[in-house]
Length: 87
Image 1: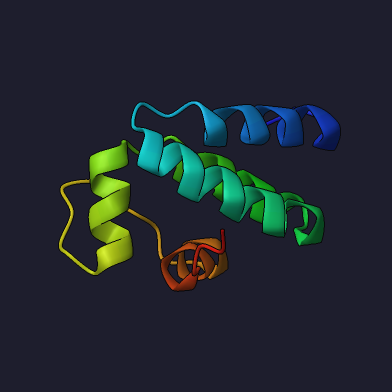
Image 2 (image 1 turned 60 degrees about the vertical axis):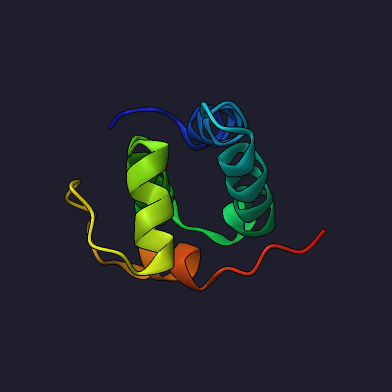
């Protein structure tokens, strides 16, 4: 991916808040807001790739349920799986 870091962050922030289900909009936008400024370029790309997975499979992944999608196990996916939403 050849986006500069600021463009990539903007795409990630937008994508995290406009998913398809309100629940995932809230969960993912909160997660992204908490972590985005602490990630390096590779981790930002991993986060971008994670956000390209559909809501149903991401929700199942977070709950520890087997998914139909191939979700790469990396630091970002582990952080998302362990993330606890705070109101």
